[in-house]
Every structure is written in structure tokens, then in C-alpha cells.
Length: 384
Image (cartoon, rainbow, N blue to C red; front, top):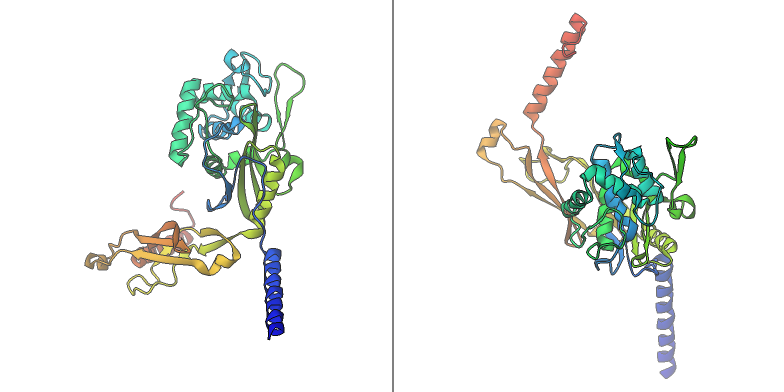
């Protein structure tokens, strides 16, 4: 009897070992990063895929310049020439070697800011866009509040350690980068490896090579980012990466081995998560209410970043207005409710549900029919 029990125990141990061995082969362990604080998020959905002390306020050094760059781009002044002040030239640290009184396009200043981390460029941008350093800092904090950077405060456009009250978090910097990456010009600047800028005082152009080695040599999926370093902040880094149409953002603060940290975090995200369409754009198919059936739609795909085992844990709930008698006359509101997306019963996103008015579509199609007929008869365009 004892032998049988021992044999059964051995079998259980073997089976359990096989199960755990199999699990370890399919599941990727969370990355082990050198950085004091770190995060990787899905750019399209905002889902946090991995984090380490990501909400603690810290000094951030030159990744501050992501905010400076996006404000300059959004100002609509990239084609304007900025006049470089002596104050800008005196900025300490990294420089693109501007000269007092020099005139240079704001666009080139943004490239010098992002690729070479020019502190002189940061001050020149701030003075041109904000009117003064204080004016630009106001714009920085206003934008931070607008996009939900609740644990951040900016005191300068470059991230130097000249103000005690200049800080952010890994999470907030991911939010900022996600916002900036929606802008096509920012994406282009951030992902540029080399930029040339005219130098009016010399016979050759300036050539700026990007300091982001993840982009230029270390990781083929990297699409951009910003480096940073000060004595107090240590090494800081923000990068973006795309693989198989999945877009990720990584941030590290005080990361002595930040290049490898970012590669590890990206690989973890790409291996363990997929971006899927939880709710497709267009007509909503699974509506039971007879009034709304075949009449409601959403205007964009709702994306989710999920693990493979989470696919069956997505739930969609439609919250629609109760139809009113007056709607029978074609006075149905454009927005008649919302679709709420849940993952494991936690709300992840909500989008408006629109009503498709057949009467309006019918009138439009008849107008187009008669318009085209009229054009073909008389042989001219009626609307220029």
C-alpha cells in the first residue's frame, strides 16, 4: 500500500512538473529592468503592459523636450524664423551651437532639440513660441493638465536641474508621448536619424545625428524617442517601437542600462500582447431592440491590447436611449447612446453610438441621382 501511494505521489510530481515546464515555455516572464522607474504601454489603447514604480515623481532631464517639441509643432509657426537670444546661447549642457542674433527656422530648432538635445534650441523655441520662458512654461503646464499628466510640473523647456519643482513620472511621460505620437510631424521628427540645417555663416550645412541609439543601431523596431541625462536625474529615456502593426511606448527614469531595459520591455510587450479590434467600425450587428436594429453604427474601430487568454473576457454593453414617439417623424438624435467595452468586467473604453436616418440617406441619394443626370444632360458641372 505504501509503495502504491509513493508511486502515485511520484506521478503527481512528474505531471505537475510537466505542467509548470510547459507554462514557462509559453508565458514570457516580466522584464527585469535596471531602471528605478519604468513603464511600457500600448500606444493605440493606452493599456499598461508593464510598470515599475511608474507613478512616483522624479526628475526627468531632457525627455522634458518632448513637451517642448509638441508645443512648438502645434503652434503652427514651424516655417517662421526665430531670432536666437543671448539667453538661449548661454544655456548650459547639450548644444547645437547657436549664435546670438542668428535667425533660424523654428522647424530646424525642433530637429536640433529632438536629435541633438540642444538646450540652446529649447530656450530659443520657448522664447519664440511662448514670448518668454515664463510664458512657455505656462503653456507646458497647461498642456500637461489638458492631457491628464496629474503628477507633473514643468519649470523650464529643457529639463536642466536649475529648478527644484520640475518633475514628472514614468506614467505621465508615457501619456505625453502617446499624445505627441498622434501628430504626424512629431512622429517624423522623432524618427529622423539625420537632419541637415542651413548654416548662414559657413559654406556647409549643419548635420545633426540622432542620439537615440535604439533608433539608429540597437533595435530595428524602434521608431523614435528622446534621450536624457543630468547628474541628478541620471539616465532617462523614452522610446517608441512598432512590430506587426502593434505600437508600444517605453519610458525609464534613472536607468543605468536603459537601452537593454527598453529592448526587454518591448520584447515582453510584443510577445505577450496583441492589439485586436474589440468592436469594428460600422453598423452594429448584435442589437436586439427592433427600433435600433440595422440603424445604429460607430465611427471608428475600438482597439484593445490583450493577452491571448483574455480574448473570451471582452464584453460589449450597449446603452441606448429609449425611443420616443416624436422620433417616428424622422427626428431621431444623431447620437442615441454609447457602447461600453469591458475586459474582465473592468471598463476600458466607451464610444458614442450613432443613428442612421434612412430618410436623410434616401433624400441624399435621390439628390445625387438627379444632380448626375442634370450634369450629363447639359454637359457642365453645377457646383464648380
